[in-house]
Amino acid sequence: MSTPLHIPSRQGQVSDAEWQVRVDLAAAYRLVAAFGWDDLVFTHITARVPGTDDQFLINPYGLLFEEITASSLVKIDVHGNKLDDSPFPVNPAGFTIHSAIHAARHDAQCVLHTHTLNGVAVSAQKHGVLPLSQQSIFVLASLAYHDYEGVALREDEKARLVADLGDRHFLMLRNHGLLTVGPTVADAFLSMYLFEAVCAIQIRALAGGGELIPVDPAIIQTAQAQARQVTHGQGAGALTWPGLLRRLDRLNPGYRQ
Image (tube, rainbow, N blue to C red; front, top):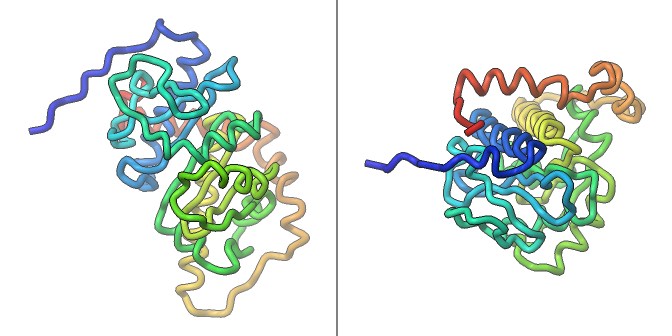
């Protein structure tokens, strides 16, 4: 029989701003699990500690995403070294991609990476994301690609990855998976929701075998303006996050601990 996890609360030991980011990041991990995007204990979601340039929060290596709490998240530096007395290990190799992006993109407060079946399947298709759905226009308006170089362990890959991402918010890692960046945890999560939906729709559309109708490229050019209009300028992350937290409170509460 497994032993229940007993994780002392860090609330009151960190700033209010850090605690809020911890709560949102723990919620994102559990939501990723709830949506079926997790890969056991592999892949990561990271968030910058508020008020710092070189401190980040990451999952405790070995905990399933559905188990992660605000207090169990581990604070690390740009090299993936632990900065607190957490009893949990971290996977420094898994932070290679995230550290490169956080260092180059100060607007990237959160970086979310998945290995979903739909995402990896589309990443292996030569033409990548196709303009086949309304969801795809928002992704295509800010999409970059990075060729596969093996498991992301080498320091020299960082520069190439950052150059490929540029100022985009969606990155397709060829033969590997999906990555999104955002100014908040909510924004990065909502972007991944769109990215995953786009890939799922594409796989199904191609599997149908019929002739496909592509979206007019001119429509894609107006996607970001359309997004601002339909979200009343709030951004989709801010608009959807409270409801997602309410859903999580019903399905898998405890992330706030």
